[in-house]
Amino acid sequence: DSLLSDIGSMRAGEIKAELTAAGIGTSDVFEKEELVRRLAHFRKSRTAAPPVAARVAPTAKAAALTSRIPMRFHSLTPDLSVRSKNSNVFLRPSPGKYPSIHINLPDQKRPLTLLVDTACSGIVVRPAIVQQYRLPTVNIGVTMQAAGGTATGSSAARLTSATL
Image 1 (cartoon, rainbow, N blue to C red):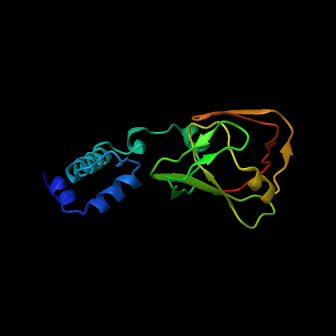
Image 2 (cartoon, one colour):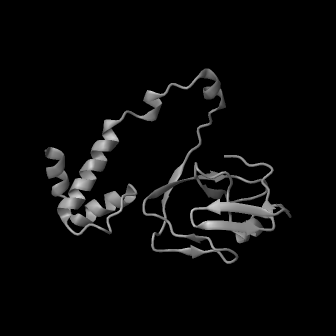
Image 3 (tube, rainbow, N blue to C red):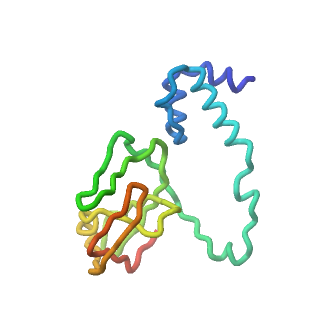
């Protein structure tokens, strides 16, 4: 198979970098042949399915409600962990690229970058960011469920307007 031979001619570090960028772990692989198999499988699966847009035609109503937002993709340092100061939530990013959007807030020169998480029902920002952007807060009890546990707080920031 030409795909396997093409990938096999790559250096192991190049293969690992492409797998990591795709969000595929390599820490459990010790042989180059396994890296080659994983990358070949990824490349085949990526080209096998037609794009979602080609498979699903939006209705006129859905198309009218759809916004196209430019996304940027960032790599997070997988060996950097963050422990919350006031709860038992512990965050450790997975390797790969993460989509983010920039929003512009009124009276702010710098855009605020937000990670796009389709499974999240809210947006979490650090208190320092709330202060830096002078976001208004509301004193209410807040509880959020995360993969690492539950976090509680006594206030929430409120965005009244923003542009993309």
